[in-house]
Amino acid sequence: MELTFLGHSGFFAKLGSKKFLFDPWFGSDNQRLIPATATPSQFRQVDAIFVSHEHFDHCDGKALADIVGRTLAHVIGPAEALDLIPVAERLKMRVKVGERFTVNGYEVTVVQAQHPKSAYPVGFVVRCGGQKLYHAGDTYDFYGLTGIDADVGLLPIGGTYTMDLFAAITALKRLRLKHVIPMHYGTFKQIEADVGDFAKRVKTSSRTQCHVLQPGQSIEL
Image (cartoon, rainbow, N blue to C red; front, side, top):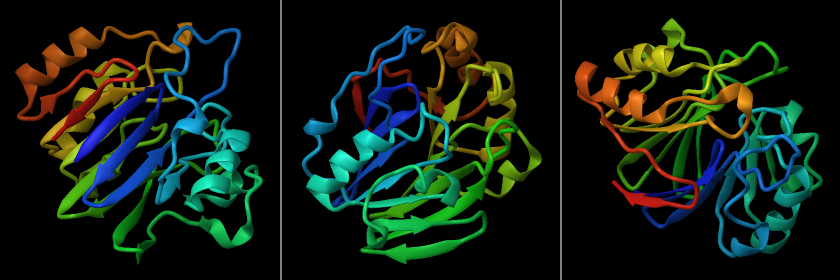
């Protein structure tokens, strides 16, 4: 598994022979403290794009339409998000929590997320090539995380309608991941977090390995 952190909650992931995007946000915002590290034109081969909910910093409709027009990637997410993305209906896969399906050689499980400002938030577990990746989207910690089966987790730690770093530590104890990569912090003033402190707490309180990626940085797990 190779993961590239695009900033905020965005990731480009290679699992086996498949390539995926999760919540990529390429836009600029006058409050954005860390600019995007990629442009839509960089993505020439993508099998699927996962969108966790409808908010602008997770559902970048115009950019996703550009990528889909070039790659014919499926866009997978809740209806409330997909309705905002101007791509052909045949390439949209509207999903709900609890669904599990296989498409084009990879398996998707749609899991619950708790984000009170979203109409219908979800997370995803993607299994491919014997590896399981969990993208939490925007969510608080909640008991239902115990049912999620994954090796690698991408978790928000910035607070403000998601877990803060302390809640993310509790979430890790429920999830039992082998690896965690923090996300959704530092992009705005409201979600600033001490990622170094998070990494230290993960090391001392769990068996999970924490990997802090700078925007644009990649890791192979």
